[in-house]
Image (cartoon, rainbow, N blue to C red; front, top):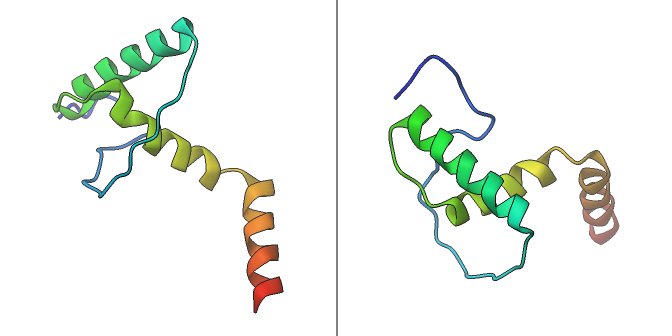
Length: 79
């Protein structure tokens, strides 16, 4: 594992998963492939680009303030 740099997306945990299919642009696909290569170089474990997508989406939603507010609002309304 390289300590020279760290990526926002750390090593991937092992989780139970469900399958979801989506379509993306060729540019996004190429960027995902590049990110997967960099991730493998950084953490010393090869990872398929598609395996990164759920973790990237989780990180995106975790950082979205509007989404967090809506979750808290819904929880308060249901309590």
